[in-house]
Image 1 (cartoon, rainbow, N blue to C red):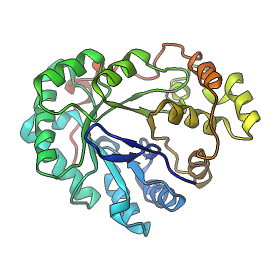
Image 2: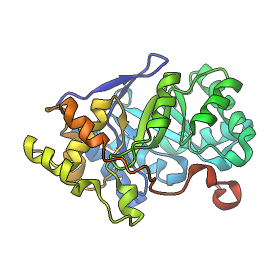
Image 3: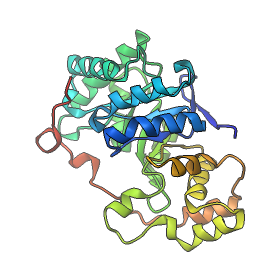
Image 4: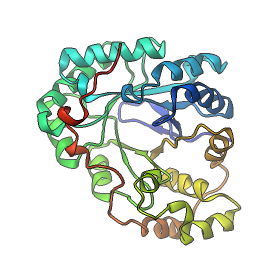
Length: 292
């Protein structure tokens, strides 16, 4: 299977489909990364706040795949916002990952209650970009207004804004803001797990529109949803620690959806997010320490 790539706004090429490790237990993460890389994945997305960067690095080393072929992405947690704090947070991440350079470094949350710290952290990762410690930088969960403010106060337009997108929550306004600035939309919870976890009693994998398309192509509902992401030009980072699911999620490069099918899936949007409003997270509620 031929992996699809996307080109970021600074010219860096990134695999469109990757393995996410949010909520992957450390003891399961190394094996999942090894399986993914040996299956053909070349993008691994982790974060300081996932507490499994060390295991991701071990999986990369055990995989037998040359580091130069792997796109490593991680995120700084809001506890490490501020200029010097963000530089230190980065050093913690690269030590755990066991790498000299990160391919994509994101700010994990906007910290709306102290956006000045968010700006200072972003200025720090701009420095890391200038110094060649990272190849691309970006943000996650930033609203259109926050993107506008960040871009007006800094020098490098984010390459990526990683946000929740799946068929039941398509975020058209946020995606339009990303597009307006030339920022790639990268989708967390791409198959809709955030809905299932939050007990909305709605699961995109069971939606009749998606199952009908899956039957047509002899694919699974998850494969149809991931293909929908690729057809839109998004990057998607589905999470799994199960070898058969990891392989299934990667088997999406041998079919295409029609314009009508894409529109049918687009129309499933409920406008209701799974999980908390990112702007509600602050240091008082979510300011846990990222260990060395």
